[in-house]
Amino acid sequence: MLRTFKTILAVFAIIIVAGSAYAFAAANVVPDTNAGYVASEVSGYTVDSIVYDLNVTDPTLVDAITFDINPTTGTNKAIVLQIRTSTTGDWKTDCALVDGSGSEVHVTCSFTSPTLALADVTALDVVASGTIDPAP
Image (cartoon, rainbow, N blue to C red):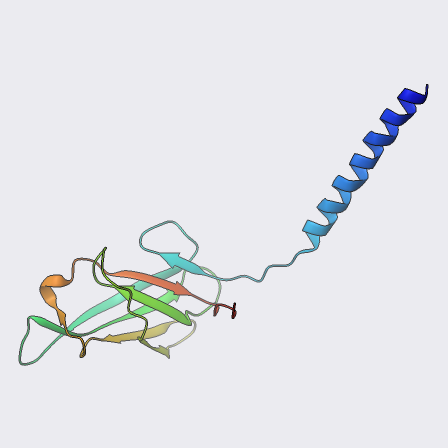
């Protein structure tokens, strides 16, 4: 009888602990955000109107890459953005973001120093986020 009571008490304690853990997890609220990378199916952004602005005097150099970026769902504008022009290249973070109509953002990434050779452009990877990373 005492052994059965201890077993029932242990099962009851496990149920209470599991239930309180579920209640705690259900109380967490995470705000909607967007993020996206390459062509992966991530609720993120659509990049369109891509223009490669070639140098006037030397058209083998790219002066700037411009494009528009829109969230695929919601209205979280891209506020942090990085691009790279090859799958093994460095990420460029100093692009200018200008608000467009609605949730659209116009992006201009300039390549005057260092210059970007058109022959070195083998991809256009865009990483964007609608939130700024918190300080560590």
